[in-house]
Image (cartoon, rainbow, N blue to C red; front, side):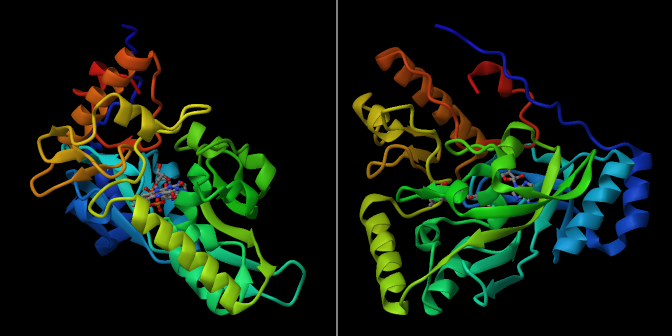
Length: 327
Ligand SMILES: Cc1cc2nc3c(=O)[nH]c(=O)nc-3n(C[C@H](O)[C@H](O)[C@H](O)COP(=O)(O)OP(=O)(O)OC[C@H]3O[C@@H](n4cnc5c(N)ncnc54)[C@H](O)[C@@H]3O)c2cc1C
């Protein structure tokens, strides 16, 4: 069987000088040894050595610029709904993005919503529904922030960010701040330029396209999507779909046909309701998650000769466990 050596960045502790500089720049705002599981939807993983919470796009921009200047690596966490954080924690600075402002513009055609990247996609969708504005009904069912959705081209019910985003305000490590039209994000299925070049840029905000409708219609469509989700997807701690659907197929169907529904490693189980959802129970660890992912991938490969590609991302110190499986 084909095996890949995984190229993950090695997580190193920050130097004393870097820590001193961080403290003098961020003062009390810089928290140390922060448990991160509660900042994720899978509810597993270890601590962040250093965590910085930002409350606005401006604060996100300044913090990122400072960290790049200091050559301190960092990762951004929106709602943590698409990431698996290592039990050994995260050596990079974790920026918790709580830049949540959004403004609805109805005076021009088409109407739009501008949102900071830490704004909740679901909250925006529900607010728009109350205003009779259509375009984000699909997003009401997706946990996460606008930034996470722009980064990963989140989508559901046949629609996605690629079809909704007009432009994003991007802070690029080399080129500074710029407006990127949607095309520049080079969207593909659950991927983007930014997802393919992690660490290169930060999403500050996005402008999304809407259309006018009635409050009743938008509300009804949104509720239909939510009801469909409730019927087809399991409750509980998860990251949603673990794997991307291979072309012309469904990862969930392949996992189910490989006989893996209900398979468990430690505290994590392949959901008997939807096989691409892995549910974390009391006592689950990120390592359980990862070993279940590896097991499922191996079994699906042995059964169908197909490599399932991860939709979720791993964050933090995975050094020991990263060489044993496929990414
Ligand atoms: C129950 C459930 C159902 C789900 N259903 C769907 C679905 O139907 N469709 C779908 O597409 N996804 C789905 N997901 C996955 C998840 O909701 C999406 O991927 C979502 O867009 C993640 O947003 P987030 O804010 O949680 O991102 P996070 O998980 O916090 O981050 C994801 C990645 O984006 C990067 N990132 C976040 N913000 C920024 C920023 N401002 N700048 C640069 N990089 C950034 C992070 O560093 C990380 O690499 C589901 C998840 C769950 C738990």
